[in-house]
Image (cartoon, rainbow, N blue to C red; front, side, top):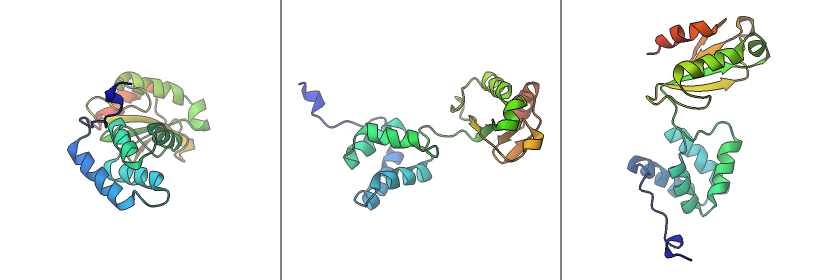
Length: 166
């Protein structure tokens, strides 16, 4: 076996300011029952996401497999592995929105932004996501950008709607 497998991992890609936050959270919570979930939740709250580099560091510090952390992060929809854009776009795909053209609206947003659902634009301006219902079924299809709801949106409206957030 090569010696490199026995050497501790280096975290050169972990931002120093993120390491400080992680160390603070770990020092306060590492030995508590349910530490994995608690630490991940606190990291998410403080930093807004849990990157692969953060996962690797937490895995080593908590003494648990990286696959376990990844499993927790992907099981719970509240966790993010990438930072959010300045504006979060939620396109409703609840029943009313779906049957009134929601999937076509999703396709147009993906085309205009150049990202897929769950991704953030390279300039960190927009994160594109879908949701199941925003409670505005009479206005379907509905798009929610940050806290603003736009109803009865058509694919040709997408560029105009996005200009408000440029």
